[in-house]
Length: 375
Ligand SMILES: [Zn+2]
Image (cartoon, rainbow, N blue to C red; front, side):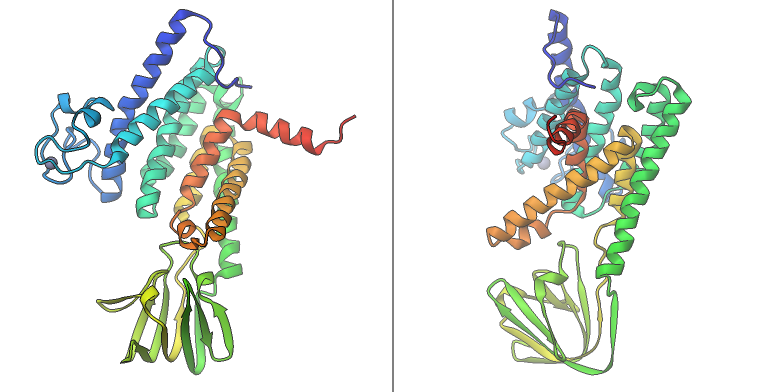
């Protein structure tokens, strides 16, 4: 289908390529605004000017040149000198490079695909950085992405590999639906498999939590379990309704212990688990308000499906899961299990989507050739 990094044929191809990098870096500057403002429920176009998150100084346009400004100001606000995160530079560079890669992969045979692919790349970048920081993917990106994918397929049927506009829009909707129901099914299955959401005990049960190195054993009644198995991602929590609890020699009565993967809280008080040896007490109920995957991921894969079709959905979910497993196993091998707990699933889906966009069909052919016996 698409050739990756096809060599430009004519000299103006270099001009187009340079233009696509500069365009990408400028769009990246806007994506930084979205990454900052969308999860904070701020408008992305009011105020129109970017402002320093530290002193709220409105950044004049001559200090807002993509890539150049961050370097020239050495990553500091021109007004107050507060450090400006490397992320601003990184997102601009990444967007520029991906816009260039998209252009080189669609030129010259399928250049009309540059626009939809650029838009998808932008959505993937914004979703990735917001998900990393906030463990959510805003609806503007997910449902907005589904709508954009369907409209773009209607306008550019080649996006779905179709000839007729309405047929392409149909395939786009089908891709979105495939993604939505596939991951929705995974989420529901996950709840059935792991989702002991609430366990109420007939009688008051004794429990002990005992730390060993960077993990712990939890014994409730006669049942022993490994602490880290309850926490798949950083946002997971576990609530214990306790009749009595003892932390560092201090006694509490009728309290709810709120556990996070690295700490336990009672109301406003917080203890770091790594500094505790044990917690003991009696409890009546455990609540695990966790989902194996966020609903944001379900809507996000629908958006990817609307842009790239149903085959891409299957590929993206498999490639994303494989990447997640590799990172998870590497983290465990290095004794840093908490690393993988800090990475949400959205960025893996974005990575899978990018892989498909650039090399998906070739990868599938390669895999099929591997599994087929040579004749
Ligand atoms: Zn400032």
